Image 1 (cartoon, rainbow, N blue to C red):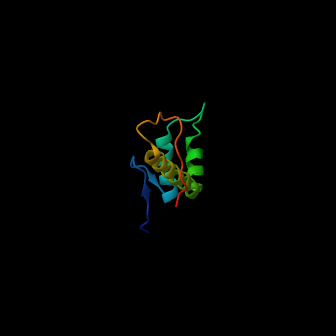
Image 2: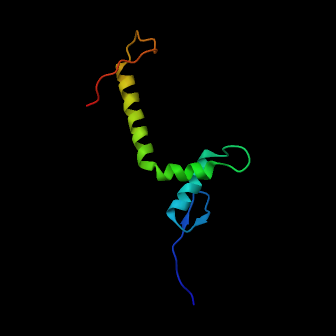
Image 3: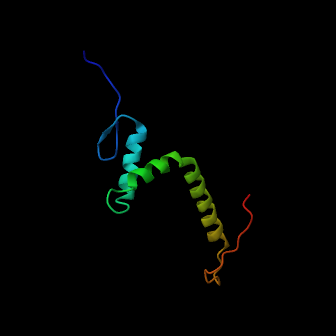
Length: 88
C-alpha cells in the first residue's frame, strides 16, 4: 500500500530521515576532511550539533569581545593591548 513520509535534505540534495542527520551532513561538509583515514568530520559535526547552545554562547562572547576591542581602539593604539570595559 502506498504511504507518504517526510524527508530532509542537506545543501547538496542528499536525503535524510531526520533534520539532525541533514544538519550533521552539512556541518561535516563545511568542516571538510579531518584526520587520517576515515574523516573525523561527521563525529565532530555531531558533537557540534549536540553542543550547539554552548557553541553559540562562545561565539556571542567572542562577538562582544570584538565590539569592545573595536570601540576601545585609539589612533595611537599599536594593537598590542585592548582596553576592556565592563560589559553591561
